[in-house]
Length: 434
Ligand SMILES: Cc1ncc(COP(=O)(O)O)c(C=O)c1O
Image (cartoon, rainbow, N blue to C red; front, side):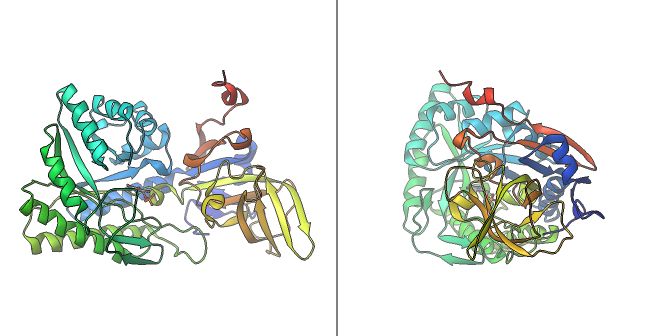
């Protein structure tokens, strides 16, 4: 576990989040329960914003809404002056309903719908990140109808693909997103964008991957992107002013991920900024407005999901299962791509771990697991299990599979808890059934 002041084990051997023991949270709100350690979210926001400011580069930290999206998170990030990126009308609507300033919103997505484009235009968001010829033509047409000119970035594939522990550079990127630099696709697209009277091309965007621990990957991406930025200014006679290098900073889920500290995130930003400063000097260009889009790193480790153990099953010489009252409907990431999590016995934190368990969800799918071969103390029905680092891509990926109810989200800070998203009700499940 990546311990911090707001995530620790108390004297009774109980996991304490934001000053509140897990069993108290469960008594007050039930299980399954998404718990958000707000202090950690705020510290992450401050870390990124301060790092950018300390580098004296004009820019914006844009939270990637897809990681965890509800009115609560927009209220928190707004207090720390972050922007946000959205990828659907739903995320955009949620942000606006939370009074998030539209001029700090960036719209991503490889197939934005006409309804979505219209909604974003009507609300005067800051940038569209254009991802296809189809979108360009549609956006240009809709802008023309509204007699409006929209600032846009282009989504670029810089040919740098970063993975958890290494990076690779590929000559040609196969991706459903964006335009490749290396095969000339992006050059052609820029020429086309320039013909459109109702979009104003202001810069470039890339996102090189997720769960990236090596800052070298970002250095390479910034290097390539800045070279291309300069080339565009010179050869295509555009006046770029914005460079957005996406998100993807890694977090600690379980061994062998590095245990990340706030300094590690400052270091990512420093590497990006230092590379950019070096390139700006070398290429003799104006410093771009820099955008970073962290999602997982802001909310991931702040989230902990609490479950109650139901059945305990031992298959002699094969496996021990504990079944929890949640599963792939609140956290589909193991079922989707075998994501690994740290799992702890929330009320037996000081007990000796004696047994390996697989943590089974309650959905009717053999693949509905949360983790395998987790070492825990002897577990019994009624015990509490905490799955750590579930803040990102859990609540936002939750579903009603098997007509399970999406759990409540509770925020904790300085020993005070409050519901920020209510648990769904049975009535919610059928309210759209005709
Ligand atoms: C365009 C873009 N920006 C930012 C992010 C956020 O990435 P992460 O949550 O890994 O920081 C993503 C994630 O897929 C993305 O596609």
